[in-house]
Length: 77
Image (cartoon, rainbow, N blue to C red; front, side):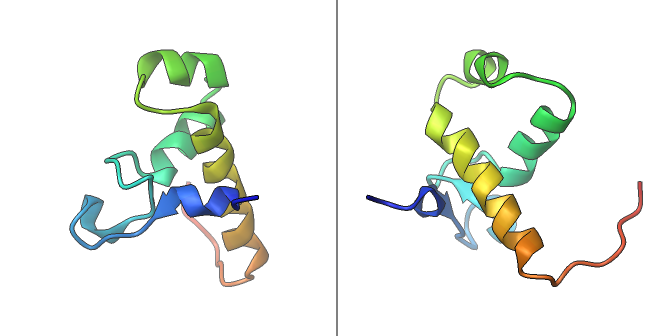
């Protein structure tokens, strides 16, 4: 089974090297912001037809991995 994290790509030529979904110009942070703003998976998929449910799950898995790495500090709200 392929890891969901395989859907997250980092390419200096795409979105300034930010983690994106499948090399598309959808940064992981965008999906996380949409989810934290209250959008559902179905709403996101309706607004962004290039995305798949597995892409959203990959963004969440990536965020969990980053937080788990323990290299975070305080953030401004």
